[in-house]
Image 1 (cartoon, rainbow, N blue to C red):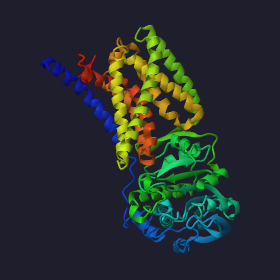
Image 2 (cartoon, rainbow, N blue to C red):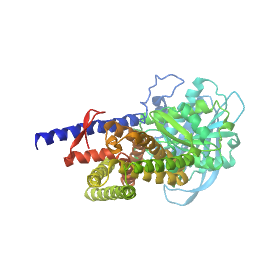
Image 3 (cartoon, rainbow, N blue to C red):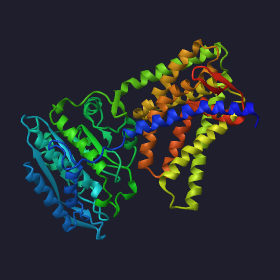
Image 4 (cartoon, one colour):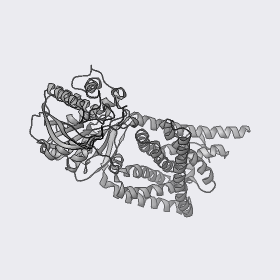
Length: 558
């Protein structure tokens, strides 16, 4: 390689490095806020939550499997009742004779009595009560340390901390249900026959479908704007988004909250999902409990109980849903009714931008139309090659670590985009490909607005930023050259990285590798939205001459 080519390569490389570092730092820093807090010891203030104190309860609850058919079940129930009584709560056990399938011995339907535990922390005023719920039965295959022992232990520690805080304004009911693993039977009977059901104004339910990770607020009741507003004001290290809630609605999964939502009661649902391979197995044991996760679950429970226990719960229902997502330890939200007007505004803005750039001959109509086709091709290639690679690895070795699959999907998608950029650079400029990607995002904005409204923020907000950036580039003599600048790529990358890094993290920790091929689809769409980045990488290896990036002081290809 000649000295001039070597210097050109270095200049182009130096231009790519800051953008790459920016993207990595942005993703890592945002995900750092999604880590559960460190478990707190027994020296924690009496009015605060301690994972170590809660863990003591758990050691008694999750010794052995405890289904309604096993003697251990009665021992666990007696222990929970005793602990709530020692804390000074009014405790009642409601019984419900029923027939259920004994999965432990396969004898078919058997007579059994379910027992729901209701412990009441009395408030100083009359009004609707807050219900904090979890279930205490396990599956036959494991002791249920995470599902749902952690939640029960967290609620016991929450009750203790609340007592230390002083008398709540309104009653708080701790409802520990039976028979959840048999089909939500305890919750069903509570809402049919319990003497307490008419007192409930809101439910916060705590579950698990894994053994570690953050405590996710993954489901709410409908018309949740007021609920989200209140949750956002007090949530400790919240991890939640409205897309997750919409996605959960499409799944065949239910929790005890399902029953209360059918009754029209406002509610929030919390669970953790990492280390999902331990769910409903012998590995769901005390040894596989994360105290950080227990701390996060408990801090959510205590914050909910402290805040909503002091509210007039009759005022929680609102007229509409909220669009919401977590970012750097906060919940950002806005009315979901904004989605349709925003889609109309974005459509008008993109069409106007297209007309203005076409008038200046900065882009060509035909190139935009075929550019959208290339976006579709890139998405399909990323998904198909990722799936093929998954199948190949699976045949070679079924013991490959889950994250190897997940990160290979991202690497494959990036490589495909670099190769596509090598091909597209001959016929299309950066502006044409950016606008092509924006049109694809616009199509998705309209689709999710009507089908998955909770996902609207993922596509409309990045598209909005892109429209604003291109509006400022109207005065530029060469918009494509401006889009290649390091600082410009960083601006375009901010929202795609922040919004989708959180989504990828959630998918990677909660879903099987084959399901995470969908991440290749999302990454492909977002790489087209920052097309100049992969174009610059492609030009790094093509030997194309660099131009001076006066704003960044680095060499970027031209």
